[in-house]
Image (cartoon, rainbow, N blue to C red; front, side):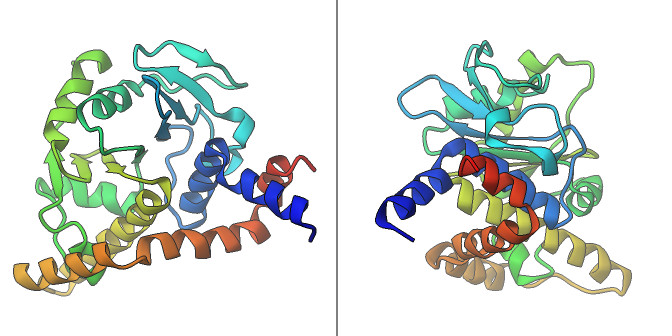
Length: 248
């Protein structure tokens, strides 16, 4: 590989539109899907705008499909598919949380089941400990329009990183797409273990133990390592994504 080719590859793999498409496919390959619903966004630095995935299946997303939407919800750069109608809360969270640069909303099976319990997820597994003191539950009202619900979601999330929407799904808010994708993977695995553990009468770990695990996960590169490992797997399973990124 020549230096120029290496540089081009590096640029392609760090392009924000590629990152969103890759994150969608990583989640899909790990069993976290939302059909044509669910969305992933990235804040556009220096602008009141965000890049966001459109209405399509997670495993068909390509960089060229990503839209650019202003905080006023006007589409600034369109793609071949329309935006999801429920993306309002992305703008509201970005306004309220300057530390947040990535938002992931899914309806993954495991986390959606746990959202029916009426309380935040419990750490039956070390992965779940990452969300100790950092996940909250929200009950949405289908009678409230998205423009009114967005501020409520942002307020409910407050300074946390995960918001379970009861009988619906989850919103993740993080600093980078790599770490936020890792957290989405970890929470869904932890939710699946919580469901199975409950069937045999298992008990969650002690709060202080969970907090210790949480500090550990926040101090090491595990979430980013998850991203890197899944990206390597993705290059084998989803060659169309990489062909589009590299202009092949």
